[in-house]
Structures are given as C-alpha cells and as structure tokens.
Length: 127
Image 1 (tube, rainbow, N blue to C red):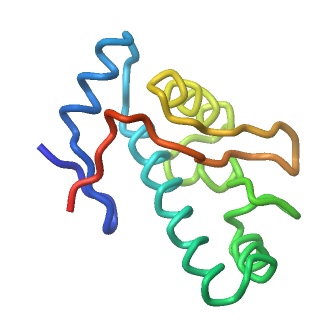
Image 2: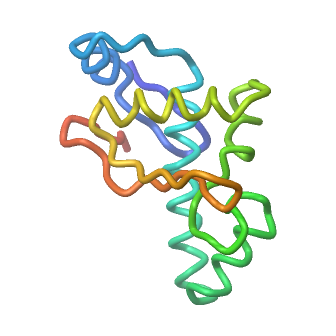
Image 3: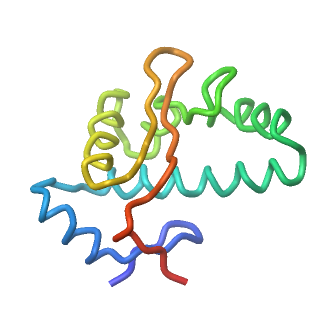
C-alpha cells in the first residue's frame, strides 16, 4: 500500500513495520510532517537552482516556511498541517521520526525549527 501527499508517494507498510519494530505509535501527523519536510526540501532545491541560495532562503522565509534568517522549517508552520495548537506536538513527532532513523536537525528557539538532512536506508519513495 502506498500513501501519497501532493506528488510524494511512500511505501506505507514498510513505514509501519519499522515503527512497530521500534514500538513507536504513529498517527497521521507523523506522515504529514515527513511529507512536508520532503516537499520543502525539494522546493528549496528548485528555488536555489532558479534564484540562488540567498534569494531562495528569503522566498521560503517570506512564505512563512523558514524561521527568520535560517534554513530551518518553522514549527509554527508545521503545526498548521497537523491540526494541533502547540509546537510541542510537532516536536514529539519529530523525535519519533528521528527514532525511526530520519536525520532531522533541530534548533530550539524563535529562530529555530527543523531541517530534514537524511532519510534511513529502509525508507523508499515510490514513483
């Protein structure tokens, strides 16, 4: 079974199997956050190619995706997509994703946020 969000598809059963192995209880928020981080990485790379890194970062900041003066995805931005009122809900799901092997850099504070650096070997995107 596959899950699709916008143009990104992933192998849902493999994801669930890995979570089960690590005793991590998933909800839709985990998938939404992961998909948003993947989507943002792609969009940012495309903007860098088109406008250069400095302008791309500014575009993402102006859209409310990146925290001010950073390349970190704002927790405030992500919480809107999972229907929660606190950034803590985003943080707890990020910690679970890290436990699953996703390399996500976190930076605390008003200028911080999250940056997906690497996915685990078991994680596969589908065509």
